[in-house]
Image (tube, rainbow, N blue to C red; front, side):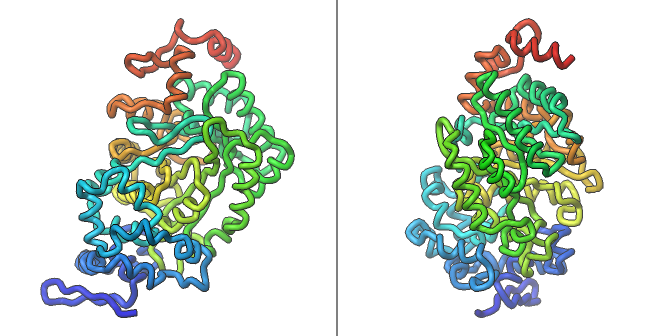
Length: 464
């Protein structure tokens, strides 16, 4: 394959491969520096972005960043590519695709039709030459609607995953967090627990507990215990009431192997979930989590930059028609996204690329305590993603996950985003909130006190 080059001020920068060009064109982030693939200067980065803008989109079908023979994710990307969907933009360069996406012809219908025609590498490439404004403008045009017990992703809606984690999986502590979140209008995306242990008995107990809460209060939502997909399969075999099948995924075969999975195992989990037929309005039931830096942390990145590796994970997710995909953007740490600026940019890139590829994207707007970031950065990313039309965010008591020890968004943050941006929960969940006296129909605001339903007042008294 020919190399790539661009001249600035009399100096010519040369890039030997598309893989190198993509890495050097990435906005600065600590993970690419750690991997030794980042641009050596701002001038080199700009030269790479200019050269990347001139690359024909068809080149990505001919020059694989990770060889077809070596990687099942590459094979999935190439073998599932929809050339008919690609046809309307097949004559464009990366820069031409950016212009088209920003134009009036790229409306909701056109973007939906285009999604199966784009490879992750195409999406990653165009994101590298887009501004923050560009990423938001295009993403907010895209609707990706999914259904299980309710409907997520509709225009004017913002959903939340109620995350009631507890350091010992104590049922009373989890129940208190669930109740707290529901009273703030959280939980329409799901009630999702990161278990403190991998004990299958404990996982089944948590699934039964969440299912009992959902059934007792007739909540139009779904539950998930974020255990390994093979544990979910075994829980299903034991008769546990499992709604969503969870798995962390990455963008290379080797990185997925480090998680103990491959495409065949994911397929087994997907089919096991479908066999239960627990969805009432749809059968999207996979819940995937991703994050920039996961392939590098497993030494499984093949010299590909971390943002492109992340976007390749979306090909894996797309294959299984997920209910939710969550980029846990700042969770891996400052080795990969050093500060608030890098976390904000990465969150917007992930959301844009996922939506462009047809995925129901959410974001765990978060940071670890040793990163150069704070809650002000998270407020900014939350607001930007809300404007960009994100499907869901996290809701955690006080923004502080006491089990995973990281900082994310709170129940109150979801209320802020909904109120300031005029957004509502999923329609079925909104109707339930009104029925239970938690939301007022006119304002969509929470109300407490004497208006609470008797069942919730009793639950509060028990937990007091």
